[in-house]
Length: 125
Image (tube, rainbow, N blue to C red):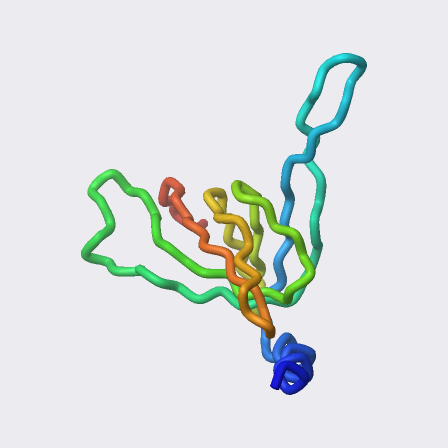
């Protein structure tokens, strides 16, 4: 049964048209001090974003653009909690997600990352 899921996971990411760049912070030593250094974990990786809570009635008066989303991405990528994820969709629009969970790789075919987009709404020009 596991072999069937492994074959499926190789085909599954061909259906994902979003591209993601994930950056995180890794500790690096600077003499006796430990400093956080921003590193790119993956760049232009195929993935799929699933929106989980996009309701106009829940948007606030203060002009925020906030909703929950889930990132579906291949296994084998170590995604730390708090990573910054930039998603470019099939239409070329870029969305930044800042509050993210650690990748949950409990599935054979993929892993999932919970994300929150929480930004000030701005007018497109």
